[in-house]
Image (tube, rainbow, N blue to C red):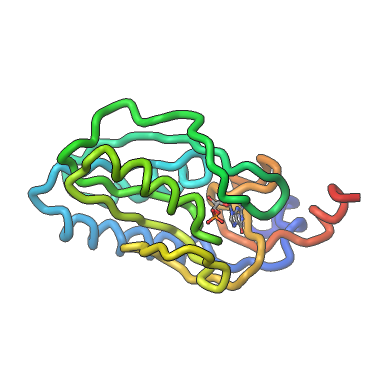
Length: 188
Ligand code: 5GP
C-alpha cells in the first residue's frame, strides 16, 4: 500500500515513515542482540498494538529467544487511557530467572507499562526492561524508565503500524496523526 491509498486521507500527516521504522527496528535488533548475549531472553508482545513492531523486531535479533504474548486493556475509551489495567491474556510460561523484554507500541502517560512492570516483577525475572516503538515524553505522569525507544513524538493521537483508532488503521505501513475529524465525527 502506498501513501496515495484512500485510507491515507484519514490522516492529518505522516509522522514516521515505513523506511524510518525499518531502519530503527534494524538498529534496535542489533542493540538487543548485543545486550542480551548469553542470556535467556523472553520477548513479550503486548497485544494488539505492538504486534507489527514485535514481529519485525524479533527477526532482527540474532539470539535463540522465546516469545510470549500478553493482552491488556486500559479501561477508558477514545484517545486516552485511565491507567486502570486489566489482563485479558496472561503469559503462557514462567518467567522466573529469565530476562524479560516487554515490547510495547507506545508509552503515553506510562500508566499501563508501570502497572505491567509491577505485575511481572513479582514473578521474579532475572531482569525486566521495556522496548517501545514510540514515546510521548510530554505526557508522562508516572516515573517509568524505557530501556529502548525508537522515536519520541509530540502529543498527538497516532495510528498505523499496529496502532489503532477504534480497532482500525493498524494496517497502515506508516505512522501518522489521525485527522481530528475522524474522532470528532465519532464523538458527535
Ligand atoms: P499509557 O498507559 O502510557 O497512557 O497508554 C498506553 C496505551 O495507550 C498504548 O499502549 C496505546 O494502546 C494507547 N495509546 C496512547 N497513545 C496513543 C496514540 O497516540 N495512538 C494510539 N493508537 N494509541 C495510543
